[in-house]
Image (cartoon, rainbow, N blue to C red; front, top):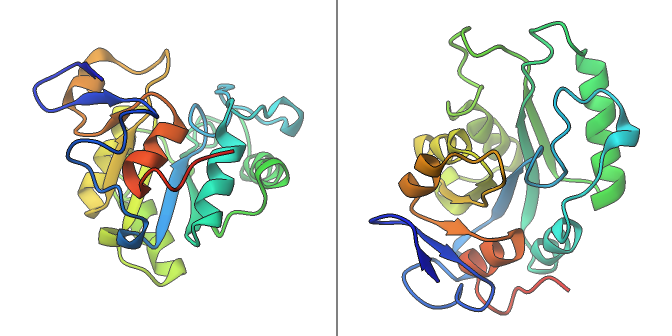
Length: 201
């Protein structure tokens, strides 16, 4: 377990069941995920379903959540729509490909707006978490959101959900330092949240 900030530590699969963390599947009704960089390899402004590649271990991690009896969902900023780089239909086609590879998620939300519109859905605003929880009939306080950048964790906190950061090459050092829960992988994040019995395989 490597200390990276006053409150944040990187949890591995072997240390996730120790320390101060939820580690109990009964505390949650759903686990929500960021799409690009968390579930699938980040392909900027991707409009081609054939370019969708799961992050190693991600398919098994989502399957473990389902085995635990929890709902799943994906929330993703897609400012490429506002920038004219792709269409909503293309985003939905990519999302369907993700469903094909992972199995159908219970809920999908995407924000089509740019960063300067002041919308309520673009992360770190909590709108997509609120919308997903409303569709699932659950409360944000019984929800966790896993993502790879600070805006993901900001959205979780703003909604009253638990946020777990799984850093990638694009994650800023200050985002890692500011996150209360940081895991080295999706598998470690799930064990941190749900306990060692929920293990991807």
